[in-house]
Image (cartoon, rainbow, N blue to C red; front, side):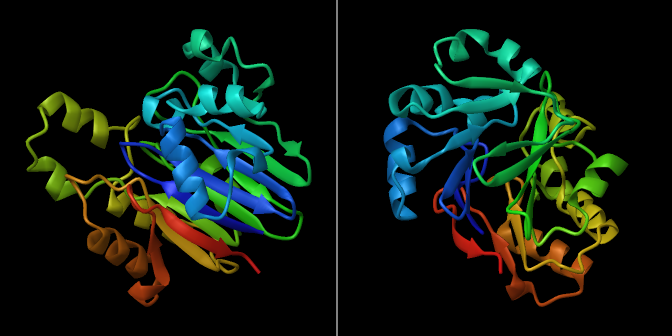
Length: 255
């Protein structure tokens, strides 16, 4: 099992997971041409994809989903709320399944477990992915943690975790007060400190990979995110990876 990021941040997000011959995309916030270019960087083409799972309806996560799915006849899975929030966008997609955010489903040999999260969207979800032996957890676009989230992510073999902003940088940024309150609020995005505190509460005994994701270009730096997570894990900062906006993240194998 392996995973990679096509790009992570407010300008577009997409994560790819592969288990055997099954390849699944989580979100796609890029144009069709950009998505193809980013997939090619990983040695993939769109017709390799067996499915797309969607987290929520914000444009940096869904801008390219429907067009990619229509052009290459790729099935989509998303919550009822996400569908209704963008029903016009998804109405012409030929293969679409509405899911319960508490119920697992399979895409070929890949087990996908959604779970609900607090974010300012209609029915947002995040996911874990498993091939039956190893498990990848992904958590971005949440304002605060919950016991259920932590139960879902404990014991993962790899984890992609939002480190959206540094609290001090956000407080002193040129964002209007309303946007600062949204980003830092209970339905916004995790700060470095929030992510580190969440990570410290998880069972990380199996963890092979930890990736900081969805970093703000204005209100964070990779160095600050890496420092926060490495302190929580008491590990060498070099062990922490960062999924960037432009370059994404190269393949990481879970063994």
